[in-house]
Length: 583
Image (cartoon, rainbow, N blue to C red):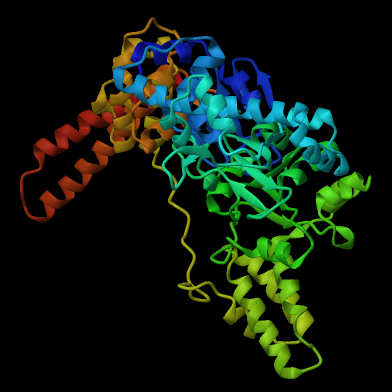
């Protein structure tokens, strides 16, 4: 590990998981346990259970589970090391770093510091520089005042070749750092020059709010309209969304994210009082972007420009499948305007209206496909239905596919069964058998499950029974007991165990199982009763085994006297256990 175990445990102890969850979803306290709307799947009724004392969460709807570090990893799209650093900063804890971690962390901090200084330089130049007058006029003309410009730290890069490089050098940044941060590049003569010149600068932050790169819009002169930072150790455009660091809390609260095309479109939604918009950073919306967004909401509205390029953007990135766990929708704006145009014209309310009136992305794509055919021609109808069927096949849910088949059949007049055959996803067979439900657990499995729950609760009444791994026949329960049983037995009776710490390093199935058992809402039975049930089912299983052995011995003419005596003894034991329950 890059950081010490002691540091990790200090961070865990100083972090209230319920408070952490409340930053991204709605929580409700009920005694020691907290319930919440799960941010990892679409639901209206809370199924996420959080136990701050144990430091665990488990969703009974989707099965997501983990501790405080897992929570940050999953909700902020970071790895464990970053999650630990985020929580340490939140708790005011200084981490003890190994030499390797110091180098890695030092490198990242140097790059972020260089970009941070560049943000300040560009922003100051926009505010005060005579050469930025055109950029200021552009922003005012688009309806962006000083408040929104300051909120997003918008800047201007002067046309000089070495203005930023010189400034950063005076601030102590080395040429290597400036180049690695994507702020400068080597000219043909070998000297370091600014990457961005004569452009309006939009800082791009990661989920933590650290500036990691730029999107730069040209105002005059040659060159591409937008120029983005190159890929760097801190800037990965395929995993970044402009504005998400500011919008994530509101996205969770409103259960909706709006994806727009441009940086000014994001700002337009903020000015319209709907601060849930984000934009990609010079690349098409892809699966990695959706993976990040689904951590905050299950509803994503694509609000692209109304022109042909915008319509094409709605299709790019989803030619393989439509994610079934996301409600992907498409918003259309009036008069061919984009969000920034509408806000500039004082029509910000129409931005929100367009989002409210959005339609499912698949419906949008199918309707657009069908609009390209003349339904008065028989052959065109068949081609239209075939084209629509290829789109329907992208959706993983057979019920949704069936609904779209019916809609396309009504519009084209082509028989539904013809469309349905063409709309089956590759590799699937119409009428394939559906897997049956798993058989219910046996009486012994249920008893072992309850026993393991008592172990996880550190039930004082269980101490006198001294359970050991041999009590568990179900492999998963035995593995779980072997993982946590000895550590919990070392605690004081009734002391709440920190299961987040105990599950650290456990494989995912075991950690998920133990999290679920620890947070199941229904009351536990008493320790004596659970142990009695387990002993009873174990004895009954042994009685049944002996009965079969006696029958086999009798059939082969063997002496079964010892087996009969053992069976009688066990039957008496079974009766004693049963009578104890009656008493």
